[in-house]
Image 1 (cartoon, rainbow, N blue to C red):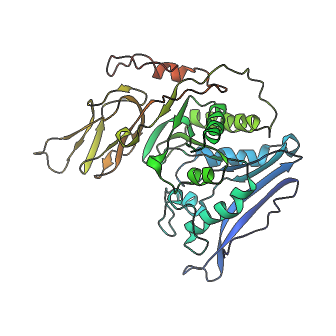
Image 2: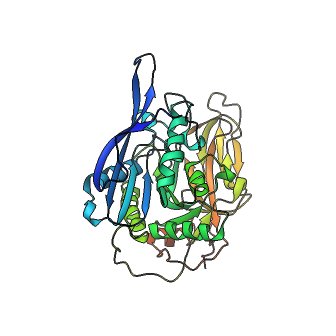
Image 3: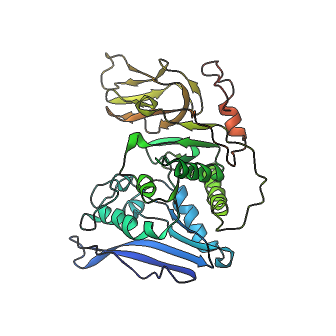
Length: 363
C-alpha cells in the first residue's frame, strides 16, 4: 500500500491547490515527506484532463505553462475538470536534472511504478493507480532537456486500437504545433504516455525545444497548444480558429534508424542544422578526440532519410549518447482537424542549403 496522501478533494468544484505527500525518511529528515504540487480546477459537467509537466526536471516550458494555467484560469470557464501536476518529479525539477537526485531514476522509465518502491517509483504508482483512473485525457509536456534541442512539436503516442490511435492523433493535431511527430520510444512500455494509453486515456505528448533553457518560441507554442487541446476536448470554449481540411506534415521517428549514436568518446561536431533534409548514408557529423591529436575524427552517418529533428546540445559525448535524431514522413493518412502550414513547416519542407535536395511534402 502506498504512503502517498493528498489534501485535495477530487470531487469538489472550484480551484484547489495542494500537495501529494509521499513519506520520505532520508538522513536529514526522519519523518518527512516529498511534496508533489497538485491543482484541481473543476466546474460543471464535462471530461477530465490530466496535465503533467516536470516529468524530467530539466525541461521547463511545461511547468511554466501549467503554473500559469493554475494561477490564471477562471474556474467558471471550465466545463469538466483539470487535474494539473506541474512538477510531477519534484526532486528532479528542484535540482534541474533529468533524473531524480533522490534515487537516480528516470521517472519516464518507471511506469507503472511501485507503491512500495523508491520515491520515483512511488510517484509513478500514484499517477498510475490514483490519477489515471480519474481521467479521460492526458497531456504530458516535455522538452529536449539538457542534452537535446528538438524542433517544437506535438507527439502522438501510438495506440494498438485504431479508434484510440485516431483520438490521440486528433488531440495532437489540435495542439497545433509546427510539427506533429509519432514517437513510440522503440516500443518502450515504461513511459507515462505508454501507461496512459494502456489506461485508455486520449494521450498527447510534446517536445518543446530544450538545451536546458527556456525557449521563447516554444513556450508560446506550449501556452497556446494546451488551451487548444482543452478546447478540442470541450473543457474550454472553442478558440474560434476555422477548421482545416486535412492532416499535413505528419512525421515519425523511423525506429532505431532514426537515432545517430556516438561510437566513441569525444566532442561531437554536427554537420546539419535542425530542420535540414538528410539522407541515409550522408555524414551526420564527426567525433573529435581532443586529448590525442594524432587520432583523426570518427565519422557518424545517418541511417534514414528525413529531417534533423533533434540534435545533441553539449559537445562532449560518450559512446552511446544520442547525437542526432531524424524524423521521416509518416505514411498513415487520417482525415481530422489539421495542422495549418506555418512558416516553420514551410521552411522545413523547402530546399535545404545543407544538401541541395527537396524533401517531399506531405499529402
